[in-house]
Amino acid sequence: MSGQDNWKQLEEKISVAAKLSRRPVAISFLDAPPSHVQKFDGTEPSGCSFWRLAAAGRVFYTVPENHFNCAVGAYTHNIALSPEREKETEQTLKMMFDLGYVKPEEVPQIPRLPNAPAAILYAPLGDVPVAPDVVLFA
Image 1: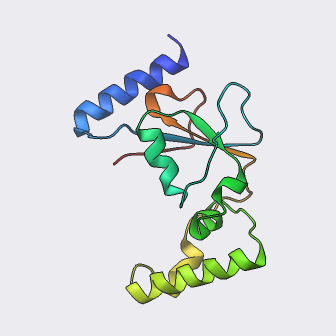
Image 2 (image 1 turned 135 degrees about the horizontal axis):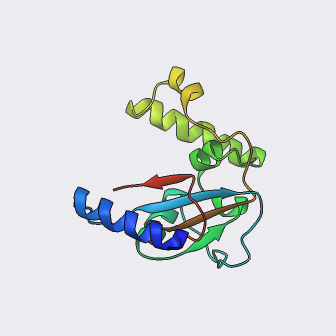
C-alpha cells in the first residue's frame, strides 16, 4: 500500500469517527517548492484562507509572498515583512489585545517556525503527496 493510500484511509477513519463536516487539511513546510504540485495563483486575505481551499479539495503550495496579507500568519511562519507590513502586525496584535483574544504576555508563547519555509503545501489529508507536518481538523 502506498503512503498516499495510508493518508486516504486515515482521513476516512478520522472523518467517520469524529463526524467531520470538512476534510482534514494537511500542511507541510518545505525547503523547496514541490515539482509535482501546482503553485497557488492569486491572493487571499489571510493564511487561514488556504485551509479553506484545501478542505474544499485543492492541493497546492504557497511561497512566502502569498502570506504577506496576514500579519499574524507571517509571524507564525517566520516570514519577514517589509517595515510597513511589520506595523500591520503590531496593529493586528493591538486589536487582538483589545478584544481579549490574546494577552501581550502570551505573544512569546505563540508557536513560530524556527525558519521561514521556501514553500508551504496544503492538501486534504487523503490527497497529500508528502508527509504533513500539521493536520487541521474542523
